[in-house]
Amino acid sequence: MPRRGENIYKRKDGRWEGRYIRGRTPAGKAEYGYVYAKSYAACREKRRKMEEAIPQKPILTGEMSVAQAVEFFLSDRRGELKASTIGRYEYMANHYVIPDLGSILLRDLTAEKLSAYFKSLQDKGLSSKTARDIGVLLKTIFKVAKKKCHCDCPGRDVKLPAYHGKKIEVFSDHEIALLAQKILETPDITGLCILLVLNTGLRLGEICALRKSDIDYRSGFLRIERSAARVRDASGTHLVVQSPKSGSSVRLVAIPNDMLELLKMTTHSIQRDTYLLTNTDTPLEPRTMQYRYRKLLERCGVRYRNFHAMRHTYATRCMENGVDIKSLSELLGHADIRTTLQTYIHSSLAHKKQAVQNICFLPIESTCGGLIPSKIPSGKLKNAVLPRETSACFVNCI
Image 1: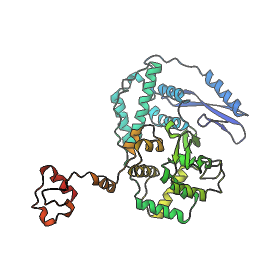
Image 2: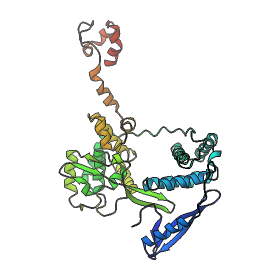
Image 3: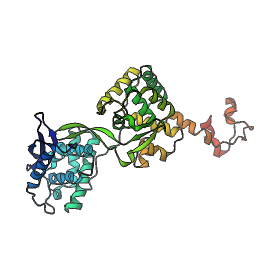
């Protein structure tokens, strides 16, 4: 069977079509060749022979262009990275990098030229995040070119465009109660899975690729081992099921008891080996899930946040309820515990106030006649004499 991202497809007439890059224009734009066969295996073999027959121009040190460096990097990493990652890299390369920088030799690409290029991207309307992502990709390409092709780029240490990230606002307890109430009024599988995300912190692709067989109803755990995503390549976009975001994302996640009981009552009609959201062998489109989620928020009168805000809400509530940071990081599937601390924890003002109530350094026996601060009459506060080290704290505690 064909693998996603390898550009071999079955045509409507029953034949198989394979596409390959047979060369590039002077500007770095890809030129494609095509092969046809009656079976997938024959088509793949034909394409392999055509690719091997393409004359390889030797690349001399210092003479590699940006387009050649991009092509070498993608072919070098294609077997290591997920199809969605390769698809994203190809899209950025073909739409932004190669058209603007493809014909420039690496040895001539300075930090000043790259800085001007990043600015031009933002002047065209690209977000600072997209410009930074392109910069990160270029730096990775330069690193591979230097290590494996001995072609250095003087602009490899260029400063990337600044991007501070969007602040994600978590849902309040009241908003979560509104969502739960609306879902339980007329329960369906979409609403059930949204509640499951709020109670487990799953990513959008993970909930779309969750099978009923991934849920252990006896132990109260669900296993995350795949993710659904729409992958972009030169021929368009395709829905794929792939491994999760990182190795740490393959994990067991505990399900709260009440949520587990609700799953037992509402999923009995779903076939064990099918996807939970569709009850078929095809996962739900992530963008379809996003659309249903948005409509649910509208029906509940809850202000829209993106789907990922539910994951942040889960992380924040876990932390507020005493889950240690290492366990939380493992539940979320983070490869680095710093991601959990720096990105996913959003303490509410109420939680911050509650957290400091037991650490107010104020002696019960004070020079105010032995009164506890909360019992000092307001009229006597102005004339009260306090030790210097407790004055500021006393004001904060009143």
